[in-house]
Length: 114
Image 1: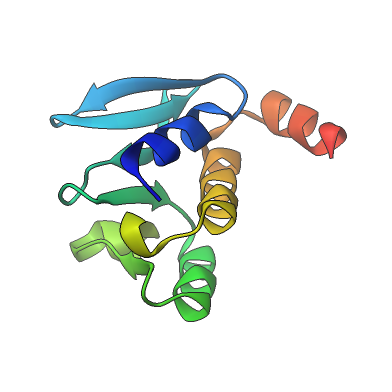
Image 2: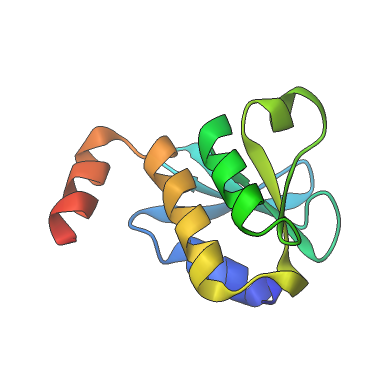
């Protein structure tokens, strides 16, 4: 997976926008960050998950997912090694992050579309 692939996937979610935070592109819904690209460095990305979701993704694919450093990682912020990742897996992680950040009106629409 490339940075461009990650960007396209992140922006495919309803009302997702790209902005910048701490010199990294980030992806937001309703002003809330759900993912970041290029963090902690080029070739990596980050999604904001719950600690339980983080554990599930890390157990399923430990070469792809790892906790971010410090308190952010303990709260669910999860690094993704893009080179080792597959699009369907990253899409699921982005979906989980988007669902946590999106307002209920959007998540209800998303669930109705399923």
